[in-house]
Image (cartoon, rainbow, N blue to C red; front, top):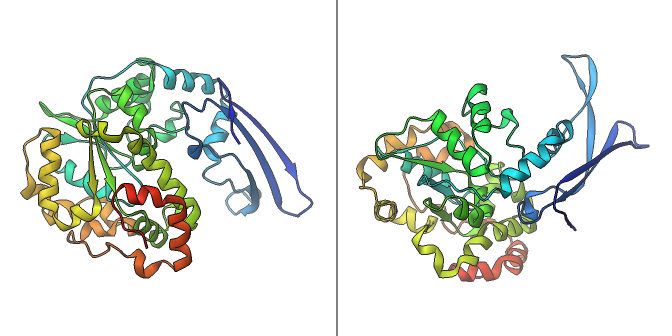
Length: 347
């Protein structure tokens, strides 16, 4: 399906259909498969509907969100090679970052909030999504984390993805003595091996939850595109955990796996285990205090409303009543081996 090329190129053409009011945008991506996992690249034909814009008084094309990053490259083709050079750079960063990652809806937001409650850990409240096929030169991606001048400086003083990531954290956040930065982007799980190689001193908190429960959670929250279809969600789960499975027993020294089921049953014990892994003194009383957790700016959002509630295993096993037998069968046919590998029961 995907061409294995040494560089990235984009070919775009717009064709008017006979059907009134519909345009087709054809996008072909040729890319270095070692840098960009297939699941992260959109390779498809998309129908762009035309709509009337009241503010301008004219018709405009409604562009899907997953197409917008590709249009950025079309506007600035020189960024394609510049981004590839940054990704391929062997430069490493020695700062001991803490990465929170894992399949979406596995408890990454809760773990992130609890880590941010520690006096020696700082980070952005939102996901940076730094490691993705989108252009690192696109300031719109980072405008919530740093100003334009800082973004320009971070690019000018570094030549790699690792260098840029580290620099823009240092330019934007105040780090206490002996402190550490934490970054949470669930889908960075796909890049686990890449991140481990570029950040040799970093540690990783890998959140895991029965993917059938995350499917139900994502479907009800409406914020996970893959959760609209059982097959897509199962394959996305596979792409998220494949790098962890590939490490086998070697991940224990740098990757701490935290199961949602265990965390919600014994949160204090799990927080203590995580802090021991990070070699930081525990501050569980404050880290787990309901006031500290529910004060998170994300708690008011519908998809993160559980931040404002006590930590309980109330939603563990929800798939048993919310998924049909056919859905469970389809899911387990695709991801059954991974479910068994992580100790989850099969129906």
